[in-house]
Image 1: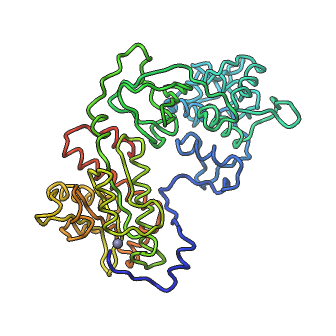
Image 2 (image 1 turned 135 degrees about the horizontal axis):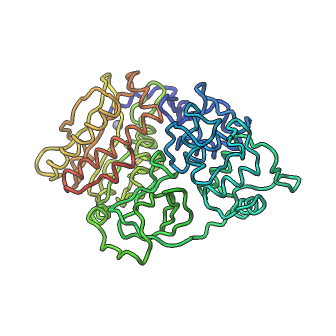
Image 3 (image 1 turned 45 degrees about the vertical axis):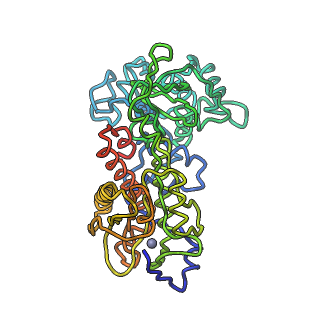
Length: 470
Ligand SMILES: [Zn+2]
């Protein structure tokens, strides 16, 4: 915190920052889909929602042809079909086929047909023409014949023709191209000059509704909509709608939308009205000419800022107001941090630091002397809530929620805490401090700790906000 163990090669290290460490629980990575692969965005987008899967060895095999069974499974997953293996109507697809559940349901919904001899031919390759029809039927794009299906894909920016002017409808399609077409079909953001006109308006009919990156709860939440809020419905994927609100677009469950005009928009519910009144101040310690502690190839000011920015992105679009005392590598004096918090009308102040001095574990400080910051009980509660979540998230040694006479706590006039994530000069702690995966876990813990604090203070149901990070 206060110690400045500034090693001589500090500036050299700054030049190569950040250096996230890989982690087995991080987002999927395929060895054969690297940063320069033309379809990497679409493939990883589908992988995030477990719509496409890699092999046990970590390969995606982007150049392999797609079989009919694989196509049924991929499309079925985008529509949240129950993929449980079962008997099918086709004599060559038994319960043992990995895609039997998807094949049967896709057939029941007339998305994919079998052959007149009663077979499905699950291992046969899908042609580009079949893909066009499949996508049109799965997402109700309107094309019913090969030519109209291809035309719809072109109009909607989902597929382009080949360089020679044809569509190549008899050619088999490879996994990379199939992923691109499916990603574009489900998420208009991936389309090429696609038309993104609204198909109608709807109103949110849940107290709060998560907006997600993709059409399943497997996708991360990017924001919240509140009861009574109206949205433009752009596109439907199964039971999910791609909607656009004032400054937010993404997928919401259709179960919580009603047609505009049918429902009476609420006066607004308690949670939504409450969070709008709350301003969170996040204070990444040190910065600029003040690096904080440094050891193990890490510099405190960078860790603090990375975690603070991640906390900010978790709170974005939740309705809470959030402000950071710094968002870049600049020096801000302690008094400037406090005056910033007061000017913003902060309701909660969380300072993020990294410890040094040879210990290990996580601790969180609050100020408890009488006289200056009057929010003693609230600060203590906030410290306990955040400390508990951080210790759980990192499985860290619990050094406790403690009293501390620190400027940014003492001179403030709102519930205020200072977290010390871990010890930069302790190898086990430093491994987490320097890892973008563990920084994200710390940010989630701070997010959850703040929610725990608010839930206990207000008695409101913050479940929709908890759901964002589950
Ligand atoms: Zn510090």
